[in-house]
Image (tube, rainbow over all chains, first blue to last red; front, side):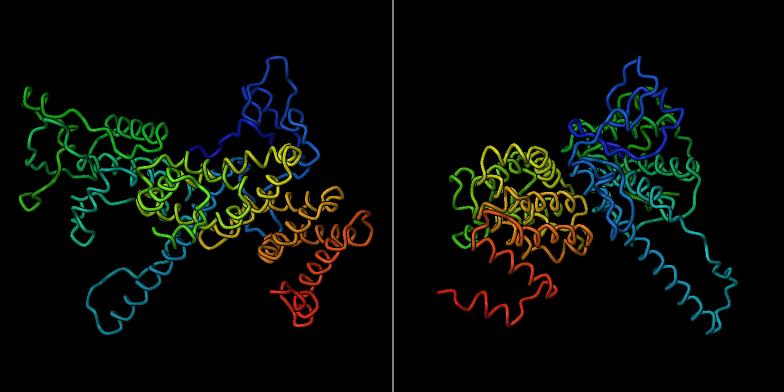
Length: 274
Length: 222
């Protein structure tokens, strides 16, 4: 789902701003239509003359509304974004509550004479930028909207998760650089592939491969899985599985350590991990 | 779903094959072409005024079912986009068939009433709904009793919510209604009555006062 989905029918509402200089070099106008080469001065409000009923600038901003909406004209997408936005706000509130409650109970414990020299809970700065949070949430949704994730959460309840072994959804409320966040998402999604449904005729993969999720170098692998996964999501609304990797042939033939294959093996008996 | 189900969702007017499809959509949405279902529902709501008044309910249930079963919103998206398509061509719709236009307005208001997003009405529908009501308040529409009746009915059902979302447009709408009541030529006495009642209703903060109840409704025969 694109954040700036264009409707094939409608005209955009124009804004009474002077077009930025870079707009003239753009391939497409604000309505998504390709601009002709001989339209150097073309700008958003020249291309689209609002009709009599469309004299409002931005249909989705109301005086009492919570704020400006993206100028997305597709009702389906507009509502989905609304939903994501309100969900994000609910989650921010919940997250803040959680932190406060943790702080509160820790203070209670320390006052009863806990000997741990825990660092005092400094108020950490949270990520509150709506745009960032929504982008991150979308990325998380892509990962969670997979058969692998479904199988994972059925197999390993949250209380049984072992940190470092079981993938953990990145926390969208923490401050991270864009690069750092994108990398965390990649690693997380790669790790989830361990729970892909078995391919037909696949070998019985009982072997455990202890992997330190924090340090693996998965640049190429990550991008493959992310791309194929997102393209799967984008192209087919009903597609909810991740592509399963071809696994056992190369592994057995070469007899050397193949990271990609290793990651695709489900971690079944984790108690044999050294 | 037995007779009560049919009654509840008002799907008696569909043929039996379609009824089966709808029932499956309600129970097992992932096994149904939800875009097709959305189109069937919109098509019917433009033809069947009884259905258009209550179709929001079946839509709500399908959306919940889909969300629960597969965590997606294909049906909602298809429904809204089809609604948007019809909205864009509403003037032509009205020219083609007054009944269908009235059904459309009833339907979109019902959807606005029923479908919420995290307990809030859908922001994306606020202005389109207002646009439809403004159209109904135009002089040519005020001369048609069925359109006045539709306008007043929708304001009774969703006026209060709509005003919360944008009170300025509600003020403007009622300006038109007052003007219509006072100045419009060719207004039938029934239309005048309907307009007066809704003006009073809003003035009483969208509530029925005893006096109004007595005046407008106590003479109605059962």
